[in-house]
Length: 456
Picture 1 (cartoon, rainbow, N blue to C red):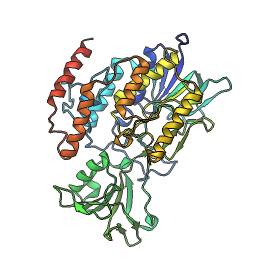
Picture 2: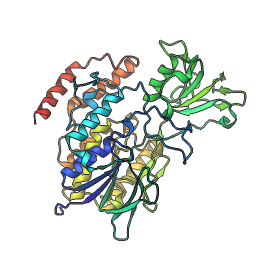
Picture 3: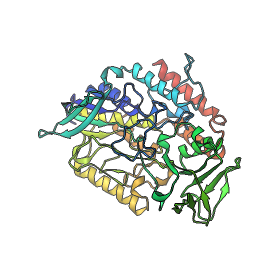
Picture 4: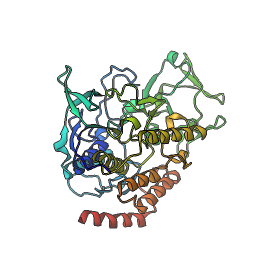
């Protein structure tokens, strides 16, 4: 073990990941500056009714809207599960707070503000400050060039020992490839720019995707649209059926072609004349400010090479990432990763050698390939990664592995069980799971645990 040291650390972003990273870095004794482009904390949880002029968000020079929230969004996890371990997401009966177990996005935003206040994170943040470039100087230090959002110009450069990247990954959309769509006369939009259903009134909409946002938005649009056709690779080519409980939502396989006459064809011979294609197809990792001279790359949405989704081996621990995995409970995982990063920077926690970390990452990527898992699923910790080998973890195994490195408590058993119960309930009651459940025993256990933490 090296002696415990103090580092000057730059954190990029003051969303949930940046807040918890800043808190744990300072708790470890480091000096921290958090750079935040917006005027408040919360990142993707800051709702705005503004959308981008480019409805597909493909223009690199477009004015970027950071948030992808739609007005009606509610969490798809209960507050007990999704809250930080150290700061439980309990109901607050003050003001206009949302007391539901699966609250709306505004309640999550308030919770993150509460977290920032509770741990004094605000004093570390530079608001309205855009990071233009991050790179290493000749002395092995990191330079961060930033500027005030409204000022323009080249900005100012500062030197740090380490950089923690927490800029999120729900801003740069991924778009489905549709042969012939360039000649198709209808409108295309990505869910990043969806806010309310009214613009879809009396329209025929083809929605691409099958994840959480696709499920919510398809139902909401169906309340005003003429027809909604959900195109998904998870639907076989032979299947075509209406969604149970709806007479204007059809489940279809992925579309084949788009045509100049406004029609869309599907593998089972069906052709539909559509007005709008709505891409609920996820997002790309995007670090336009980060210059590692090619050491860290994004290839088919794999950020790599990374040791355990956090450290580039040859740059560790001086460059790290918080929050890359998806299909996870994000906030507690941010805590585990932040504790690990803070401890490695101080020298309290040791990392393997760069060679060992590189071999570990290569073995992980090899196991994905041999299992037939595409690169774009590298950071997916859902059931698709059920193989446990060479660093291929499901989220709770991954979190508990990090907790062991840190010498901190592992994920609570009630949290694991509640996550599983919610997943099963969501499948059984896709329309009502947020308001009907059968795990009150786990809720009781969670609040018993919260009472101990709050009393401390």
